[in-house]
Each structure stands twice: as C-alpha cells, then as structure tokens.
Image 1 (spheres, rainbow, N blue to C red):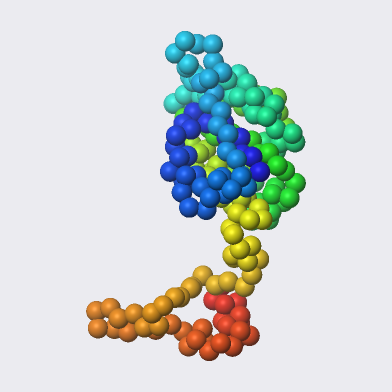
Image 2 (cartoon, rainbow, N blue to C red):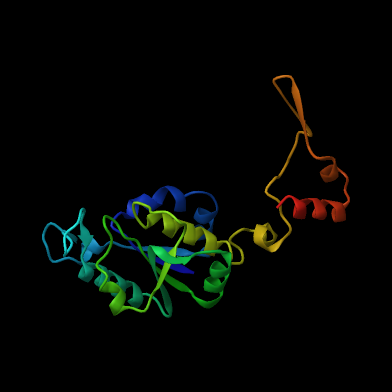
Length: 212
C-alpha cells in the first residue's frame, strides 16, 4: 500500500509515521508514504500557493493549479489510485470503509487542505471522494490523513504482526487489564474482575460483549 499525501506541511506527519507500528510497517515494506508539496508545483519564485477568496471572506484559499499538478504527479506514480479529499461535510469515515479501501486499492492519494480550504475546481478535475473523520473542523487535513493511514494500514496483513490483534475482528471490550492482579493506591485495592482470572473463555467472551 502506498499513500500519496498532498500537503503544504510534510514535516507535520513525521512524529506519527516515524514511531511504533507505522514505522515498522514502512521498514518492512508493508506500506510506503510519498509526500507532494503543492509549493513545488508553482511558478511564483516565492512558491506562493494561497490567494484571497472570490466573494470576500476571511482567510486565504489554496490555489487550484498547484494542487492539481501535485495530484497529477501522484497519479503518475500510482496504478489505480483512490483520491480522498478531506471535508467536514464529507462522508463519515469508519472501519468498514477502511477495510474496503485496503482490499480494493494499492495507492491512495490524500489531499490535505489548509487555511480556508482548497479551490473547489480541483474537485471538478478529478474523480474523488470527500471524507470526514468526525463532526468537527480541524486546522488542516494532516491529522485526518494520519487517521486514515493508521486505520487502513492495520487492515493490511503483517502490519500488526499478529492479525488477531485487530480489535474489530474479535470480541473485545473497552476495558482491559494486566498484571499485577491487585493495584494498591491510597489505601484502596483495585482488583482485576474475577471472570478474567477464571480461565472460562465462554464466560470471558460474554463479559467482553457486555462491556462494549
């Protein structure tokens, strides 16, 4: 799986993709991440990519052409790519979508907006899907991009090491426990639920279902 990320701030992704499971997935060549900065596709010597919006309003809008050219470059490096545009009004992303994308595509182009957004004419040039990661507005698309990379990558065999680690494919609860059996804090004893110590897997599964 290759993720092609269109972003004005490529370094903002470093802290997440260079740690833990995603870092190992990159090292093991399970996933690849390629970055495309629209500033590299400008003709302006200052690499300016934003302009005031037509019709007035606060903030600046990212120009269409630098983003279009960045997407074109990404498409040249991809066979059959799914293009995703992050938008608060887009379809709510979930695990079902992550599974479908992981099955159908080897290349995903993620378009990260900033400021007041990207010139909407980009959406007229390419066939893409608008996606939201939640009922809220973020400063840019980099955080949603990392959410999709994490959510989709965990569906790829070998990324988690043991595929049984997928919580969504097994009985799991929101509460988990580990050793020691009793945690002592400020004079109180906090114990592991007895059912988890019983060894009775049927009862444990029932407990986990009820704790969802």
